[in-house]
Length: 137
Image (cartoon, rainbow, N blue to C red; front, top):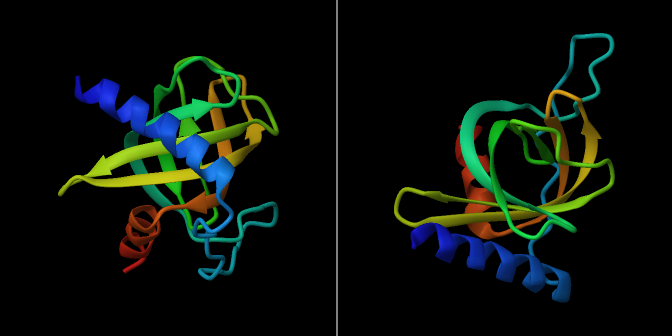
């Protein structure tokens, strides 16, 4: 029952963010120096291993994937099977203690045959932005 309510919440969030331009834009402020010569990341990543719900555009229902790591601009995800396509829109959701619902929307920027993929975030709610800020402290 709780899972069904969360799926409905995620679907409503996708519709809501598609209709509203006032949704909080994801900040781009935690720039860090990268040392690896081929490192493309511009923001500090925080390892998580957190199960989250993701609804990929065109899919009939959200699925649970692992949020491997997260920054203020995006995240890396792992699924059991390849499911994401480059350029595909997606919405993610997870619940923190205290029933804080973290919601964000973004676009798939790369995929791997292993089932890993990355999203560049475009919009997020206050709970999500607060969660990222808390990770950096």
